[in-house]
Amino acid sequence: MQRTMLAVALALSALRPVLAESIGIAQLASKDSWLVLGMDDLAASRDRWHATPIYAWWGSETVQTLVKDELERSGAEAKERLRELGVAEDAWSVPKSVGFALFAAHDEQLDSDQPHFLAYGDWAEGADGVASIFEAVLAEHEKTKPGRVRAVEIRGHKATAITVKPEEPKPEIGKDGRPRRPRPRRGGFFEEGGTFQHVETIWYVRDGSRFLLGSLEKDFEEVLGVLEGQTRASISEDPDLKAALEQVGRADMWSVLLTGPMQRVAGMGGAQMGFLQPMLTALFGEVRAYGFSVGVGGGDAQVEVTSGILVKGDRAGVLALPDPAKAASAPPRFVPNDAVGYGTIQLQLRDMMKLIETAASNLPEEMSEMVDPTLQQYGPDLRKAFDALGPEVHVVGRAAPPKGGGDPVDQGVYAVTCRDEQAVTGLLNLFLPEAGFEPRDFNGNTIFDAPDGDVSMGFGGGMFYMGSSPVVEQCLRGGEQGLGDSAACKQALAAVGTDPVLGWGYTDLVAAIDARRQSLLASAQRAEGRMVPKDQREIADRVGIDVPDGIVKELGEIDAKSLGEGFGPMQWDMRAVSDGLRTRLRLLKPAKAD
Image 1 (cartoon, helix red, strand yellow):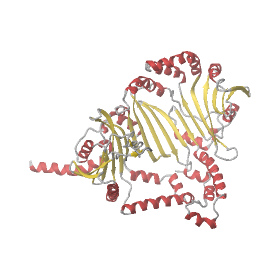
Image 2 (image 1 turned 90 degrees about the vertical axis):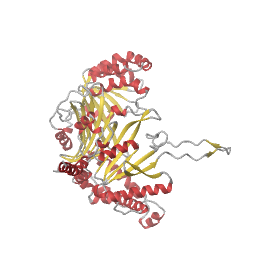
Image 3 (image 1 turned 180 degrees about the vertical axis):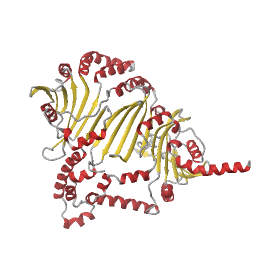
């Protein structure tokens, strides 16, 4: 029996390091957490980032020369701060993993659920150096604010309690010489009006290579118990968290916002939210969670941001409007070939009026009484217009050359398939005359112009256009404009794949950035002409005048060719999944990159 017990003990002791390796913020965070964020392996993430073309571009001599002064300044400031604290310059290191959670806990004194936080980091071999920084900062804080840092013990661990409750403000003396009630400080996390204004103390604990910071002592005791090998009801077992992470994946960084626990937090579940909840449900359905992840260096993307919306049952309300899915194809021929961005989405606009009426019927009575007359007056015309529009919606973006210098002018247009021009015109005639819009003929098509002439609406080729006047006119001219033949568009289309999508789009980042670089270059040239002469720069430095040197030359070298070494198009797509929607935003590698 003793041998058996000894064998079990040895097995458990050998297993504990394995269990410790698997512990992350999800296992530590309370089951009542409503926001959880984690980065599980920063070293691997950093290695993948360093292998991307954009990182190589950033490290090029041209770019580093341009940012050299700023990097040296920030590095010197960081070293000086470490010297002030009395710690080694190499004390700081990148953690192995980090996590953060916001959770709801009931406050007996306030008799309401309040938000609390837990932060976690594992510094592995760099723990001692980082601990020296934390301890130096706490010692400095104790010197400047005596009595607000004290040593305590939590579950047998040495811990530090830090008082964060704002100090009583000093009495103010009025003009009449009499003391008056001081105004409370506002704006900070722990000050009046802040997210954690109810928190008076936060706790800090080091457990080997792990560091913990939190706002609730009782929760801290349970977290430390998990690190000792005990079990706890944590958010890791929550089905909505699991489903949200299934949608987006963990990648290099992940986060999940859970709507159920979030509504428990003070201010979120009050009377107003109770009144509006039926309308919100009608508008969006029953949303359970929002997921988010960021990955670097995967496949054809340098950076990939994935977001997901987890719903209970079928998509409803606004979330049901994107439909049906179809394979991505090249932009229509009306899209100008000088566009730097294009996107399209399938929207069932014919369901819009039904959605508005359903939401209005779920409003509180006093609010519904204000909305009903408007719906009765304009409802029929709105319904006709929505029935005539969609489902194809196209968005075009263009960076027009600046007029007389300055930044490029952002111009864009929305284009929607239109089956009945008269139905939409009937609605426009109700509102546009009062706004000063006037109709005119353009190549046999009708255009409504805003008073300033910058914005127009028009019909042509079975489409309704709305946006910047020059782009609307370009679209109405039609013809073989051929944006789909551009290299950036072809690369983005290939990245979307052949599976049906609800929407997709891209931005030609090289063209968009280069347009703004040209503007910045012109500004730098004007500024350099007004700079202090080189023989007087020593004097300028002494009086604190920051004089950049050579910026025009360096900006001139960061041209489209240089940008093309690091940047590919920015591409996005939206897909329907069994339990909601998933959207990807991806910074692609340059076309010639492996």
